[in-house]
Amino acid sequence: MSTDIAADPQSRQLVVFTLGSEEYGVPITLVQEIIRYTSPRPIPGSPSHVEGVINLRGRIIPVVDLRSRFGAYGDRPEEAKIVIVELPDSTIGMTVDEVKEVLTVSSDQCEPPPDGAGDAEYLDSVAKLDGRLLVMLDMPKLFGDVGY
Image (cartoon, rainbow, N blue to C red; front, side, top):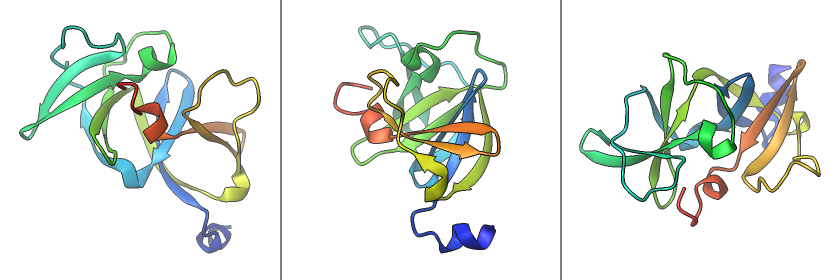
């Protein structure tokens, strides 16, 4: 099967992370690095899902709590990570529960988000993987012009 994926020009390599029991994927090409969670410095007046900023080797990077952004509940685990993503106009950190794996997903494993998935325009597609569902995120739409 790996040859099928390698031959599929639409296959994508994803960094897979969890929030609670849900799995999400982002294109590996956008992931700059993954760091251990450190408490960001709060910024007054920022949206509630923006935890604050961190200083990463001299760069000030906003950190978004994806649990809060997605309306998910629960406590942040001690092993939480910050995934640093590089977008065309910005670099943003995302707080996630756990980074699980790097995975290649072929186009025939993916479907568009179903109707009724809410107003989540940042959902790229859903991959069906051996009994698992992996929600792939459209990062530019997730962190678009509306301020994270």
